[in-house]
Length: 139
Image 1: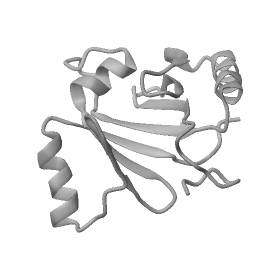
Image 2 (image 1 turned 180 degrees about the vertical axis):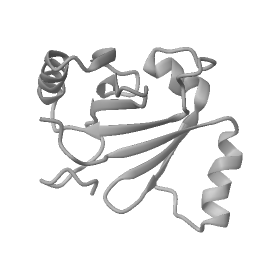
Image 3 (image 1 turned 135 degrees about the vertical axis):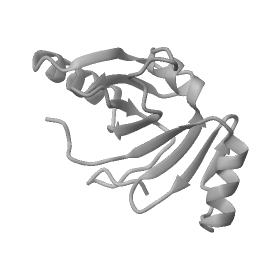
């Protein structure tokens, strides 16, 4: 069963510095982490991340110029690689469109992507660097 929660909301951005500074200065938010070309803001139990839209499309495995790419993805973090694999098996059996099968990710975790009927992309991932409570909320 797909847990009814959100772990990350990622916005694909054209100008990372502009967007980062907007959230820092106009919203007055505190930066959780900046690592290379991705920025994280911890919100109430989940994370907002900013990532170059071309890199986000590449990570999903699609062309950024397609009409299906909305530049926002949602993510569900699970506690293990085995949980990610099990959920992909379950979703595949229910004819959910798998965009990218789970695999070891360049950032040190493990993830894949599925799409809903209107091509909204969900990343399903294990991230060994993010702590979650028993309910799956980001700590």
